[in-house]
Image 1 (cartoon, helix red, strand yellow):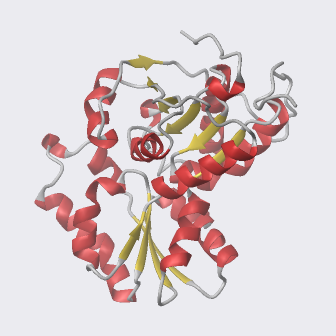
Image 2 (cartoon, rainbow, N blue to C red; image 1 turned 90 degrees about the horizontal axis):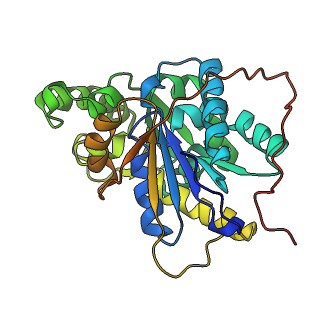
Length: 304
């Protein structure tokens, strides 16, 4: 059931979404950095994984999810999925500005790229990501926008997110996973990178294994903390930050098996999960060239 919208836009929730439970690693950082806010998280596990989807599919999925979360009166949308950010963030931002009187949409790519450029000492950065994210070239563009003299070595990892989300036999840290991780890290070790971007929100769960394979002198960059800082800046600039002094609430939506989501989610969130509400997303009829036809009555930020 869609909750009754808050009268004060500051009291509306921040919405976070991903293809499954991986984005809960981002939600974890948000809960720690901005504990006073309310959150609603949507895991599109029925269509997991996103990493092998086309850009057109991802854009359509993003529109479905954004419509659902805006209907729940979200004040900010956070795309906690690297593949979705790389393929569809500009289209989502245009759609929200045109049809919702200005709900901001932020993603994981630019904050990670900026942080990686800031910490590299040699100007050689590695990227581990899904095939869709690597193929999009989004990280190359984001890194070059910060410093065109930095080299980025990108390695697609098509098997890694599925192995982390649904490990064979239910055991995550196995020799099989270790060998898969070693194989993906090998090109980065050979290239001599000193900084590695984890370009998928599932990968922080195996950060210790990655660090061992890459070497202790390599800095690993994840999206959560940098994205939390960007969210705080956006809320402040819009005067949308919650005024409460205590902790906010968080809730969960899932397009797939809600029980499986709850079972897996605690491991990713590292906090207790509340009840997971199943949600059925109507397939998007969005066509990029078609103008929007609906406009909500209430703006996303407080009126002057």
